[in-house]
Length: 69
Image (cartoon, one colour):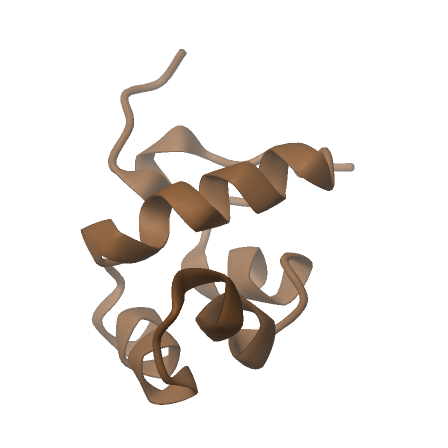
């Protein structure tokens, strides 16, 4: 699998906006706004990180505000 490097693809790989919203405890609209703005809000980052690791998704760490490893 290639590295996921954009928010839209990352959300899709995690199961879609509704799944990510449920993980983060927000409304799906908040996920769509994050995709539109191109920035994942801080409160969504940890749940997304945990789910990505559980699904073994290879992603660009800068999507979650992390530095390249």
